[in-house]
Structure formats: structure tokens, C-alpha cells
Image (cartoon, rainbow over all chains, first blue to last red; front, side, top):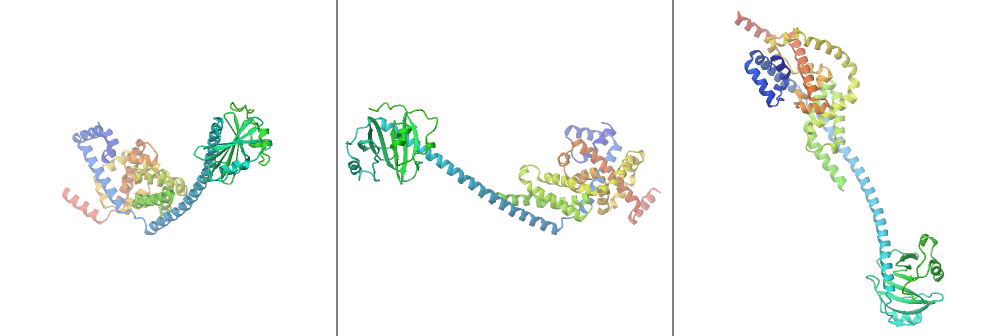
Length: 261
Length: 204
């Protein structure tokens, strides 16, 4: 290192910015060069002097400024709080919407589960506990056996073949079998106080080749399992008008149930 | 609820970090703006800007350097335009002083044993000399000598390479010494005269 190179690195050296190799090189040169050593000492004391003078004269922030800043931070916080509440409210509203949507989709999922179970149980042709009753006899037979009253629906040209107790999933249900000119229909009547089953207007679902119609009467849900097609169902349920759009347009034609007589 | 709590915590955290920096910010702002009123406005602007962007501050990194970066940026963006007319004269001054700096004359002055004249300089004179530095040199000198930031921190604050920091600091300090030397030479006081007298006596 020569005097000129040292001059370039002098401040970096005095500011403690030089890394090992460079620092060693500078100190090596200083040890052998009186002129540079003197110049370095002079620069060092000048630097210290300027720094101490500048700092001694440095003004403190006025108290008024300090107070104003505290005030402004407080104001800003209030604004942010209001914004946060707004965001929170928006989030809550969003959550409520999500909850409603999630709950309704959960309920419609639940209906499908009940419908599927009803279809499977209907298809297994469980033996009836009471055979060839009139609807009134059937109602009397169910009376007291279930927590809910069972009103046996009357359908045109359809006779009650019999009934029994048969669960739909976790619900105790009245199972009513009808006969429509040789075609077997099954109706499950079960209580749904919690409102898990998403149905108000009659809903038509399809499951395992059966058509089902589910409707609600207060806390009581009715699921009719049938191999009738949509038109027959509509004709059969004149008291429950099934909206046209309740049946998917792309739905396949109903297959005759394997278990029908 | 989460939002409310974190805002309060954030304010407390910010105040805890920023308030101790206030004196340094103000002292620097004063050197940048040359006016109490502008300095207060600049500090306030930078301070509130920092608070608003506090969530962008990377925790664990150098908060003071981050705050000064905001201060210098705010100054450059907002205040520099206002002071431009004033710095215009500084620009031409800068040329001539720089020219002098690299002349043989300047080197002689720097090597002059009468350097101890600087000992008699007052704080106000040193600050005034800093105030008269061209803005680029002034910022580096303020950050290095008033705020004692490292070269790397200054490079980050001003968004320039470390090499630029070093060259600006070199020229800035040399210019500063030159100004101070002229102050000292222009206003020799009693003490200096006495001192010189004694020296001469010794030599004689």
C-alpha cells in the first residue's frame, strides 16, 4: 500500500469500516510512514472535533412536536379502530353469509342422505307388521308407537298395502307401503324437529333408480320412494304441486325398480 | 377484536421504537431544511408515514435506519423542490470548492500545521458549515457524523452503493474542513493569537 492508496481508505479506516485484510494493510503502511501517520492523526482529531461540535449543537426535538406526534398517533389509531370495526363487521357479515350457505348446503346434503337410506330400506322389502289396513286403521296402528302423529296420505288409485316401523338413518319412521296397480311405493314418515332435512316444497330426488319425493308438514318429513316417473308423481300428488323446476331436465327416465312386483 | 388489539399493540411498539429517534430525526431535519418550521413538518411527515407503513417494517432489522430512510425520502420528494432555488447557488459553489479541493493549494492547506485552529470553532459554526454542503454530500455527512450510521446503513438509507457513500463522504468531509478552515482563518480570536504568540516565542 502506498500513500495515495492510504488516502483513499483513510476515512474508512477511521470510521472502523475496514475489514481484516485492508485494516492490516493500512496499519502496516502507517507503521512505516511518519507523514501518513501524522496526517491520519490529524484527520482523526478533526473528525472527532467536528462530530462532537455538531452533536453538542444538535437541537432536541421541541416538546410541542413531541406532543403533536403523540396526538397524531392517537388520532390515527382511532381511525384504524373504526376501520378495524368496519372490517370486522364486514368479516362477520361474510361469515354469516358463509354460514347460511354452508348450512343450507349441509341440509340439502342431509336430505340426500335421508333419501338414499329410505330408498335402500324400501328396496330391501322388509316384512310388514300390519297388512292390508285402511288408511284410518294404519293411522290408528301407528298412534302411540312414534313421537309424532302419522297422517297417512291418500293417493288416487293407490291402495295402502301395509305398514311397519322402520328407521330412516337415526330417525324412527313409519313405513307405509302402497300399491299402485302392481307397482310398489314406500312412504317414510319421520320427525325432523332440528330441521336437518332441507325441504319445504316437495323436492324430487333420484337415488338407485328410484324417484323420491320429499315434503314437510311442520316437524314431520315425508319421503315417498317410487319407481313412477315424474308425470305419474305429479298426477299422484295433486295436493302437493311440484314445481316444474324441481325435477332436473336432464334426469334420466325412471328405471323400473328391480323389486317391484 | 384481533384487529383492535393489534392496532393498539402496534402503536405502542411503534412509539417505543420511534420516540427515542425523534431528537436525531429533528436534528437531521434541521440540517436538511435549514428551518425550524420545515424541520418540524418534515419530521412529522416522515414520522406519520413510518407509522402508516409500520406493518411493512421487517421486524428485527434496523428500525432507526428504516426511519431515516423514510426521512430522507420524504425530504427528497417533498422538501427538496422547495429548497431547490437555494441549493442552486450551492451547486455552483460546489464546483468551485471541489476544484479547489483537488488543487495543490487545498492539499497544502490540509497539511497546514495551523489545523488546530479548528479547536476554537463553535458548534454553530460547524453546523453552519454542514448546512452549506451540497445536499448529496450533506446527507452523507449528517448520517455518518451526526447519526453515526455505518457505511452499509447509509447505502441502504440513500439507496446508493457503498462506494458512492465512501466517495461522497470523502468529498463532503474535505469540503467541510475547507469551510471550517476559512471560518477559523476569518475569525481569529484572542486565544488563537495568544497561542500563536507563544509558539512564535518558543521558536524565536
